[in-house]
Length: 147
Image 1 (cartoon, rainbow, N blue to C red):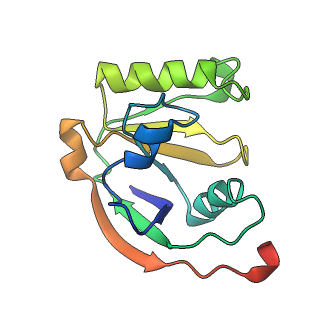
Image 2 (tube, one colour):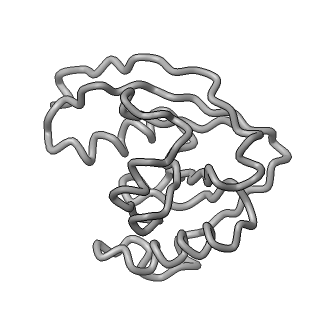
Image 3 (cartoon, one colour):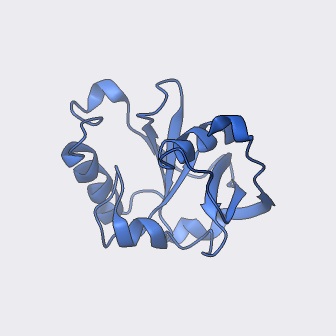
């Protein structure tokens, strides 16, 4: 399995520190998790939605690889009413419960940005996370027309 993320180069791509500090759709502040996507295009869309029309600085494209046999849990949109709500109550409750239960190092969730994409959450505190590795870190070339 491969996962992709556009991340701030000033932080380790294996820490989940940004999500721990600020929280995200699928985790409350104080809970480390790494947000990635199943495609690099999905990762770019996820990054762009948070840029407020400004070209992001210090960004790198990170590619993760995990064995296909590694357990991954999937959440389907129809199984979780309110997952896409702006208040993030339902989605955070599910993500926090997944982190607490420790059933897997990988959780696939729907993307609010683009319904055909799936986001991937990686739990850096899970024992199986040692089987997930960073296979490349490359600069991101942003096309100025995006901004």
